[in-house]
Amino acid sequence: MTAAELSALLPSMLPRLWAFALRISGDQHDAEDLVQRACVRALERAHQLQPGTSPISWMFSIVQSTWLNEVRARGVRSRSGTEWDEGFLETVPDPSAKTPEEQAMNGQIIRAVQQLPETQRVVMLLVAVEGLSYSEAAEALDVPIGTIMSRLSRARQAIGAQFSEQKKAGRATRAATSKEIGA
Image 1 (cartoon, rainbow, N blue to C red):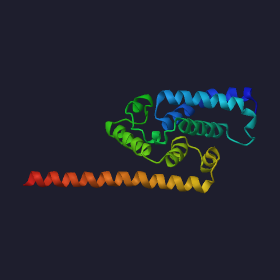
Image 2: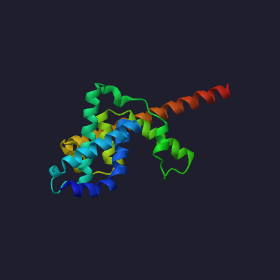
Image 3: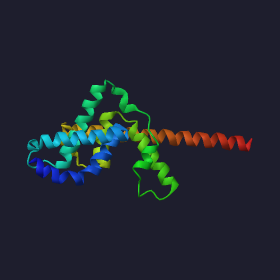
Image 4: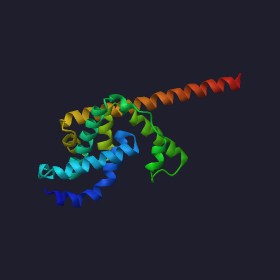
């Protein structure tokens, strides 16, 4: 692929790339810089995009590797565990959330995904949010498809466990409250 051909495709990819960059970096400015650096890198290396490779998958791969390089350069591996910024919910609105309950649930899901280890979080974002197939995600991250399946399974289990713990805590609170009222 030529840089001109890739340049024609990039505008339609930018919203997805920016959303992915925002989710992995957790910061709007970092996401903007990350997408810009990834696009420049991609245009410089457009000739490396192999026939049959999905351009969006290739771009996700570049965004991910650019982010990892940035994290290494900063020497701050713990950045992936940065506290969740509630302002993120306003910058990426969920048009399908119609009720406050749905919005609250969506917020809980986003916080649960943010608490995952980076390897699981990135796979969850690529497959569940960006809609990549397992093979596309494996290609984007340059790992075997079995690794994608394993990381996704562990991510789903971790999120399920978080919600199970919340449910148990809620029942315990309701039971304690009803005992106090009845006493």
